[in-house]
Length: 536
Image (tube, rainbow, N blue to C red):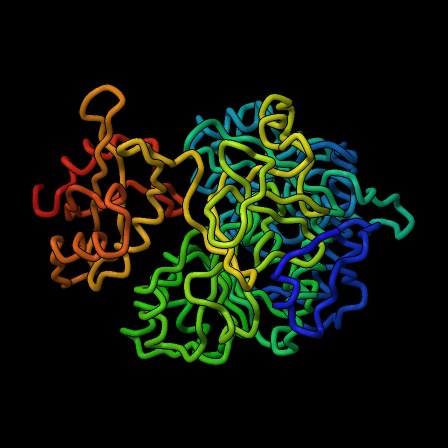
């Protein structure tokens, strides 16, 4: 029995739980009932209607089978959100082939390791990246630079060849709800990437949870801007697949093209924008310069905390307050969700648990002991959106779950009396200072409330064996003057003494991953020493 104060936060129209999903992803989407003339995807002016999407999907499904792929085989995808990407994604899912999405920025060395893990039998990749596909794996080039009109052979097809088949028969066996649909790899910023299998049922449940919590009919109309690459579960499930389920229009871009995004907003303002906070900041900055407004839409961010500075920047160009949620690849990108009535969301909160998802906050050292409101502990969850284990890695799987079956997320959170949750850091990021545990994220979030501080980085330096001091660095907003002493004085007023950095240094850049997250694996002291503002 799930119980918690967040149950009273659900709007009256929200169901208390989701019915079990018994079909595959395409069965969940039900594209056959979509208006065939509606635009499903607009990628850089290339429009694909729902009718064209369904027809092409079934033709390519036949082409994949003709190429020798079968249910359970892996197909590697590495491309922007172009029409061919969407078509082959759905075609593979219809036939039970497992789709493995890849980062367009991955190096050949990184891809070698991933292909060795998943052993895809075919790769469908942007033509500019085809040279990076490991030797021996047939590659189908797609995108504007792909050779036109070439069919290839059944065992080594090209795009025209895949598309040239008759549509898949309606009675072709469908994958089971419990079969793996997607294999996504975690970023691996602090270790080797791990494969996360997501089943058709998990994805279907995630889509149903989203539609249950966000029942605003305005989200079924207008355009949904897609600004993140599709190897992230947030963009793949919550943005791409959910938008198809809503029968709305996906507008995708070639990279982060400010002019294209602003031009699209002028032509057809979006009804939904889901992205990560750094991209939202980038859009707000460019829109402010160009005099473009983003009004009357739902703005949802994830992946990183939403800082007061980004909220202030966004408020200059929009009447819509952005909100933040929480999810991870291992939970299909879902877990904690903001309310669509953004005015009731407390500042800094990442929302409430989804209906039917069992959530608890536990003591880091005692992973089955629940903590009450206001206490900081590890977020744990279980339910139909949670995966069952890592790809061919039983040791990592065993470490990921508690003895009573909860997923250990590794994220530190707290819950208030009303049932709203707040991210406080990462369990593995905890540093010991003066015998006390400090979550760097907590200190960083406070520093980022200081006017002029764009981003903060808090780290420990070992001065003698076993003894750490806490230090911090920051980047400043363009043209801003920041008084480090005043910022540290704020920390002294609002934090326990052991959480106050001994020194705050301005740097020209911070150590970030490709996804914009702080790298905790670097030597913070060495980084700051080499990147002091004005030192180079």
